[in-house]
Length: 314
Length: 292
Image (tube, rainbow over all chains, first blue to last red):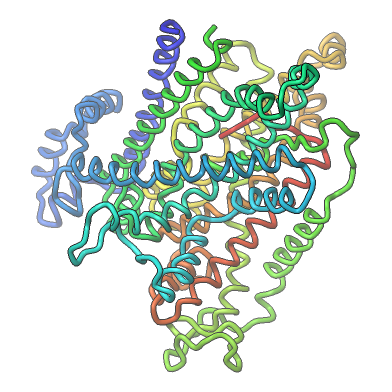
């Protein structure tokens, strides 16, 4: 197990290096000279050249890359152009809020996905299975911003059942109940796509396992349906774990739209606002931190996978 | 890349034990009809409706059903139906072009990787793996934001994130073909590498890639409209569904149902393309072993 984890960790390093290179390139393709905008129209050519040299912009690209990487690794993402404040604390505060939403949506998606997947996998015909399949296909296709807006229109703004936006009630309140109320609609919106994917994956995994010989053998031995199901479920755990873990990782990306629609103060909303303000350091840091969290989640999923399924450790 | 490859990656196992029906399901046929209608709207719709940009601020935010404005007017008094119909063109194109680009580049990379030796294959595929380490939407946003807003930049950003999954499908398929007898025969007969790639491999890799890409269209439409919604796509006043959603969201209190119209259009297009892609995949029995 330790060897498997070690190998898996080693494999993560080139991926993270690649991720950092991609982000660095996106910084470098930005048109325009950052120095010109920092100094404004009054900057003399000499001042410009001096600032260029001080910022290391005259260095060869590899040197610039390593300097940038060294800063990023130590949590120094530079200064926000719009907020004139260090980027790192802004991004990490937002990351916590995004993780709250992601975990809530992930839990909801897993529960929904398991129920629908089991239902459609065990009963392949009938009205319930049809509805389940249709729901899975539909939920995979829905754009989060569309469904989020529809929920706001029908349940929040007119009916007043839920708060329209934000994470806490600005006029006092706060606390867990308030947070929970604000969390419901964004979590449902974010959960739909992963719920559909988990449902379809779990369904095919249930179908696979139920057609295996051991299920027939156990039934033939006279085991009760419930006990046979327990054995069967055990065999679906590895694939379930993989897909559920992946989906929680993907939620980090999908929540951008959800956060933008519901004004949930996470990485997505931060990136969205930074787009309008052309605040690139914040956008890059937001994407970098999300990618890092994504790689980390995948690592944890693989470790758990190795734990429940000895076959993949080799 | 959440649903990126999802639509195409899950084999339908309902028919695992019985012979496969080679027939489109009713839902896939219905989806095909909707897709044809959307395409026809994009082609000819703009000829039938009024000017989508001309606004009359005296008649802003008229409710749907008003005489002359079937779907009402928006915040600047522009006819919503005209904008919705006219916007079909750009919304569809902005979804199709990245898929087309990804199909060509991804197939090229995948076939090259599949046919080259161990190191060439590793170099290409491991490089593409890096893109799987990002939540796709975020990567598209970062690229589009770096390039600056605009429709073409949004299209480039989307194309970049769609290439890796297509390349994986093409590579898997190519490597499956490499060991087959007819490939051996082609090599033995002295055919050059490029001739083998073009005449033996490409025709066999194309069908699964095409089916796979069909399943990507719905997603691509959703993402491109999403980029516009975030302010990274087409700039106003040109009508486009994602931009309309973002414009209409401002009036969510005064005219709540206004935002629902373009949001529903995107939803319908996405569902139609996905159901059709699903149906095609079952029909042709293609299994993409890829997740993005």
